[in-house]
Image (cartoon, rainbow, N blue to C red; front, top):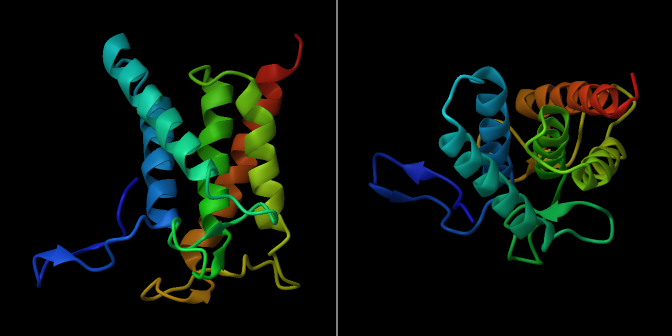
Length: 165
């Protein structure tokens, strides 16, 4: 599990707990890199795909009945956060579409996106995410909006990859 943020000025972690969104960015970054760099050697691709699946699986242990995650994964008192679900969903669905995760991850990814989708307000904003600008309290952020779009594009790609013909 990955910690929250590094404070370069202080030379230490700002929030050392396992930040849900940060872990989501790790797996989303791996998914994007694997998609954009198909020429990478097989052993490297396999290592990265294995790490993404390991982080996905570790994060899912903290998923609540609402389908979402605490902002700090191992802190049940932390606020419920929706962008973690979007990022993990994007990674799972991209992995299915690109063939480095098994088909069983499709249902997980689609369910993660659906859980986050229940947080979309009447203006189309994903609410209850680590809010800009400091990402320390619930709110909204441009990043969460982008993740919503990326997640739904990955859902379509995964659906297409699983369709016969």
